[in-house]
Length: 193
Length: 258
Image (cartoon, rainbow over all chains, first blue to last red; front, side):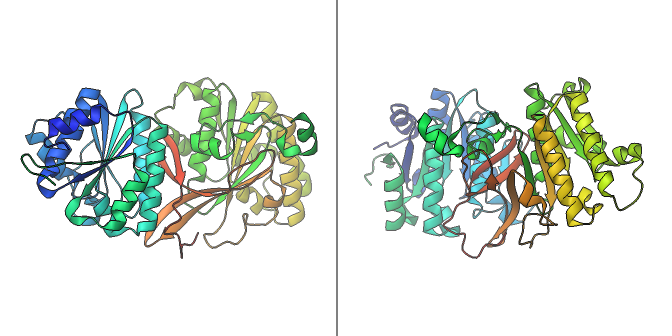
């Protein structure tokens, strides 16, 4: 059970390209992001495709910039900023999807970014399954994750799906167990989940 | 297997014309059977022209001479639509591998000034297009739109004659063609006059699907002679890397309309 970004990255590095369900807590949220997009992707030289369904991409960019993470190989598929209907700052690496209910368009943006960056391997980070569950029925969400995972497997890409413990339900946990290859829980340093 | 192929003509392999649109080629089991005349039909804003242009650009890149006959829009304006493609090379036009021709120019050169065209005019137009295909050794052709040509033919008899004759002329020349057809969003058939769909070798329906307030662009291969194909509905996106397709998710499709 990884307790910090480095331990998480080390655990991921041992794995072949696969679909991973990563259970996190509110207090381990940014550690988990850092472990995946900075340490793991950096060591494996992967392009990161970050699907932000929880908070706007700009907020993630601000945090990663403070942490001095190399942003040049991180791309965002942002489906939260457009529904806020406010003038968001445009960033070259951010691709907007009108709404978190347009799940097919999320897949299409991921597909496009992978096509554009085919010289390097990819890790797709879905943040988070719980936030997508607010906007979508369990049936269509299961179908989406199933197709996305299989598509990524066929392209030899990693996919890491955040599941936030405090927002999870039995239905989501069952779905993740069913469609993912592996489940990892991230603990906080010095604590046990 | 050989014995089975004799009994089932659909299993006999026909040479494919790869559209270059990965998702569509997968749906069609490798591409459009070469020489087929396909009706690409849909309402406005569904991506028909963009898809047909990409089909031609990929053909030209592969060294197949490709011809776009524009009936409604000036080709100068259309050319601007291919330039944003990452894979587009201006030399394709300079070298003459990708050619744009305006149909009004053909009408004018043939002296077809009457608004309603006759059966003889149909023969004249088909011959003019066939000559152009021969002269340029065209292997891929797009007519955008066949609806606008049919508008000047008026009767079912002349439309039938035109579609049959143009389809045969192009197929005899090994030319794979897309006829663009415009229909209203609520249409219950695949073409405005109902004749085009019965004669074409294939029908690809492009639409807008509304689902809980979201509007998704969709594509569905309804019919394609000479190949097995998926008949499922796909969602598409028009990107600088070309058209991308993913399956339409069915979990929430209740109540959607095309």
